[in-house]
Length: 111
Image (cartoon, rainbow, N blue to C red; front, top):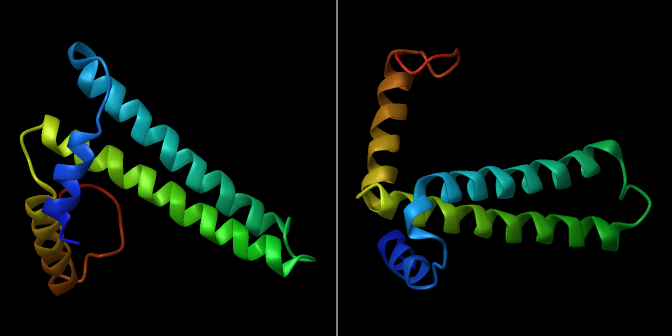
């Protein structure tokens, strides 16, 4: 599936208060990202060390949460008048430039 195709589908399933679109979507994205982080934390803590089946289930659940995160990214991009293809292309270009300048590590937007 192409990113633009996914974005169209995501937008077609979006239900939220349009007058609060940006804060609603940003908070939803933060919430889903936190769910990913929380599931990873439990793996790091060793919650599934004694049960390989539960460990596999945890990895699957993380991928499902990543899908929810992607949904919020896609719909938020649409609200901002952008598309995922452009977002992804711009990010690849930015990272390539940072790699060329040997500034992949570090902090700040202007590396």
